[in-house]
Structure formats: structure tokens, C-alpha cells
Length: 353
Ligand code: SAH
Image (cartoon, rainbow, N blue to C red; front, top):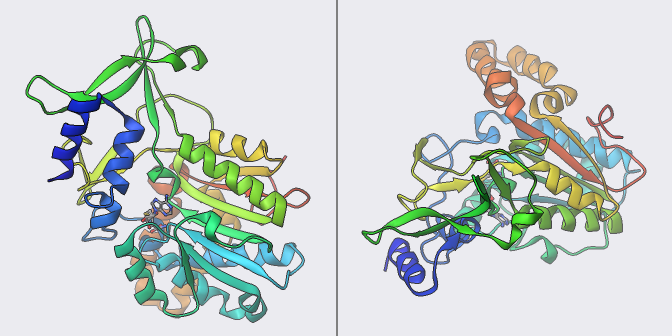
């Protein structure tokens, strides 16, 4: 039975699903979920990410990782973890960039945290031996400082949505319409009194899974030392808005149209993620992607690549613009850092309180 038909049966039997439950089913269902069956990155897939735009992205994250390790006093053991490594491009570019720091590589145990079997296979092809996989962060052994990278991971973690009606907050849910098809609806919510005030029509998103990851990273860096770098599109300040989006072959589609066949995301809620980390006594900082990449030297890196192959000036210019341009990924995407107290990871010096 298709995921759509199973969801319809489930709703008919047990009632409407929250947006978070619907996202969980569409992305993670073991038979019909997007990540179990078809995650498709790249030009011929459903969506494109920064590492696929340019090799500079992963390389500069490598520069960040080595500089962070040096600032941490060059620990002899280090867990270098990427969560949600996609097709492995970011890690492959990172590893090429850090070849110049053999002691860093010697210290680093490399772990990939991935839930998608098809993507694990792509990562294995791209990265070969020398990396290990875990299905969840807690499976990566603790007891050594952590440097963790996650690009476009928070946006796949499910969120609930609340809508401010004329009479108060209601939860947005997925039920069945008169024809028995999936349809959005609203239901009363016991959470109403906990939600911030807003004018009618406002949408408030809340992701327990994103906040739980912030808390887990906070606990982990406080216990073992280290830093997590989370890059994603999303807000730096608390706010309102419906950010649920389904992408199929680079086109926005109705999120209820093709459950499990489209990539389904919400914006990262950085204020909630970072607050959850601070509650664990971790420190946090946030920058735009443009500022972070500038601090890591993207200008100089682009010039070096251009000197090496002058014929690529057009494509390099386009890549640079795509990554840092204000109307491209530069401002909408943020780079946030959760780190152990007592130091400031590279790039975040001006925004760490
Ligand atoms: N970081 C890559 C891929 C982003 S797509 C890039 O920038 O190109 C999201 C990735 O996160 C995919 O690899 C997906 O399978 C993985 N993922 C989704 N949910 C996850 C979870 N809960 N834990 C670990 N990985 C997850």
C-alpha cells in the first residue's frame, strides 16, 4: 500500500496528524519515506545544497575545523562528526582541504551520522575506508572532544505548526476532506496558553526535534569539549511564518500532494536550538552564511582557484555569488555554533557574547 493510502487509513482510524507527525512519516517511514527510498540531491534530483554548489564550501569548513582544533590546544583525540552528510561531497572536500594538517587527521576519528540507507551507500562510494557510520549521534562514542558539522540537517527535523485564529491559537493538522483526500485543518490545542501573542493569521512553528538536538549538542560539548557548526536556512531571531515546503525536481509542490516523494522541510529555528544548548551551559553564536564564509577566507580561496584555472572565472564567480550573495544563500542561510565554555571557535569572534 502506498504511503498516502496508509496515512489516509491511519487518519480515518485514529484522527488527524500534526504537521510534525506528517513530516516524520513522509521523511522517515521505513517503507515509503523520502529518505528511505529516494533522497535525490543535485541538479538531476529534487534539491541542491551548498556543497554541491561549490567545492569551496566543504574546503572552508575544513579550514574551520583545523583552526578550531588548534584553538582547542590540538587534542590528540577528536571526534570529527558530520550529521546528514548527503552524498558525501562536503566531507570529501573537507578531507582534501585538511590534507595539509596531517596531525589533525591523525587525531580525528571520522563519523557520519546518517539515517538514509541509499545515501549511506553514496557516502561509502565517495569516501571509501577511513570513516564510520552511526544511525544517531548518541551512537558516536563520547569521551573525546567533538567537532560536528551539519549542513541542511535541522530543516529535515519535524516541526508542529500553530495558527492564530480570531479566537486564539489552533494547531494545524492533516486530516481528510469530504472526498477522503489529505487536507489541512485546525484543531484546538492545549498548548494555546504557552504560545506568544500574535495577530490573527500568524503561523508559529515549534520543533521539539530541533530543540532536542540543540540540547544534545550542548550537553556533549560541555562534557567533552568542542563545537558544533550548524548551517541551514532559517531565522536568527524568534518569529512567525509558515515555512513548510515540499520540493520535487527543484519545483515547489503541495506538501500534501505526494507524501514521501518530495523533500519536505521547515526553516531551522536557530533561537530555539541555541537556547536549548545554552540551558545545558554551552555557549552559542550565530552569523549569516556570507559572514561565516568571509571569515573563513572565501574571497582568497576563490582567487586561488581562479589563478589555478583562469578559464573558470565565470563559473567560480557564479558559485561565489550563490553562496554569499545577499539575495542568494548568503543572508537566508545562517551558520550557528554551539561550543564548550571558555573559548570562541574561529569565525565567531565578533558575535560570541
Ligand atoms: N549535508 C548534505 C545533505 C543535506 S540533506 C548537504 O549539504 O548536501 C539532509 C541529510 O540529512 C541527508 O543526508 C539525510 O538523509 C540526513 N538526515 C535526515 N534526517 C536525519 C537525522 N534525523 N539524523 C541524521 N541524518 C539525517
